[in-house]
Length: 300
Image (cartoon, rainbow, N blue to C red; front, side, top):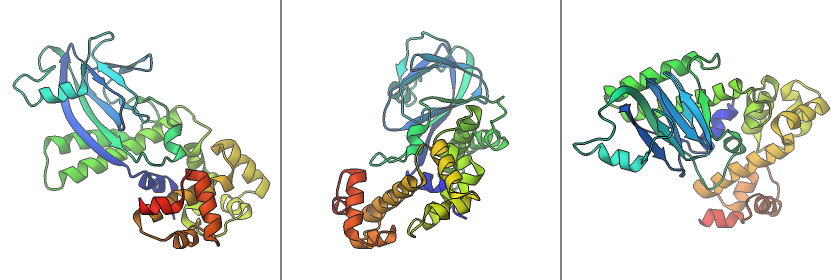
């Protein structure tokens, strides 16, 4: 069975990078500027304060912070500290005088980032909050999430053959569990992620992702969800924020973009692969969606 959430993660070309597990001794403060990567921090020991978008968040052992929209933020032992930049801190680690290596009350942090493509976006990423804070004690922080962090830490401390791949995969699992916990924690009821977690709507998403090249109808999608056509259409629009047919068109365009850019298919071949009988109709739809012709994407 097609897992639509995994499809989306594959489509955005998620790639993780773990910087370090390190003790930060008080007083400390590090400024992470907004850029093209989504940074994350897991608090392993001690406490910290994160300041972002004019708000303060208290971090305790087991907490995870994620910045999906790449927003700038400061991580410190207390509010109001003068912060050094992230690059400045990283450069200090290669010297004989690393920053925040002495002091009192160490806070141990696991830090890294996630990269995903910037040429086209799936609405799931744009729907995520600027700051996601999952607390260790929350009911929505799953056992898997609690297990991943110490496993990741041990792999970093004792690397073996294939450690880089292991760390990357564990970090990706941490992201997925963090997003899941966030949706449950905030009781998010509108958006693509809410639809993917809805038991009945998830089956319609799976049908779209597995069979988008076929002429799917509203009746087909409603049947997959075990609902009448009208009830399904209303529920999908209410929860996801777009019509089922609009999401089908969106996924077809996302798939078409990758077929053109990475698989080397012609425009005519791509049109057929994503369910269009006419390459002219496909080209028009593609132009409306991306504001560029499919031929330009293929040449690029």
